[in-house]
Image 1 (cartoon, one colour):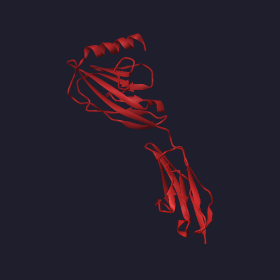
Image 2 (tube, one colour):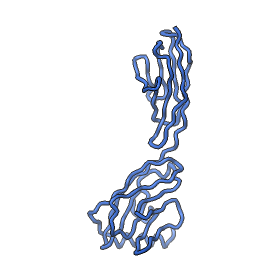
Image 3 (cartoon, rainbow, N blue to C red):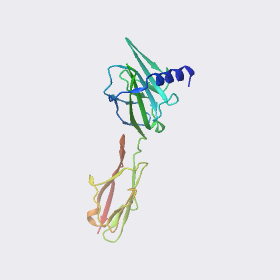
Length: 218
């Protein structure tokens, strides 16, 4: 970190040392890897003079990632380059986020009359889910004589199963694995014939497999 930035930040910490009871809030957010995201703030104080953002919960010069100085008629931002930028309202813009950007972000607002406010928010970054592949041990089975295993291949942990367009009900014959990736039907009955799909998702993306038709012969 450049020495002048460290000295600037430390001097602010030393000068504004008296917290205020007013409340400022940081809105937590979810983001998809590779996108830009804003951590919005609420209840922005009208007499704010500095906005300082930190990665993590520590408030020190090493954790400071961006700041904004509010002067009459002008706004001064820092650092001049980098991933993070403080918007005009004090919110934090992070560009092209990765999984490593997930975590807590801390905002310190320095006010007039030697007061400050502190708030924290969480950013969670998700990888895009891949479209799952649904496969079966066999697609033509004999009623009441054979079993079938359907497997949903995916990189997601959140999996839903559908049968003929509606959520798949489980029964004594339809057993799901603990990780929800494998459905076993034993034995297969005529009413099990139809179209199966699996859907995967996270809070920022989703994907559904192609239809797989199970045929049952008597």
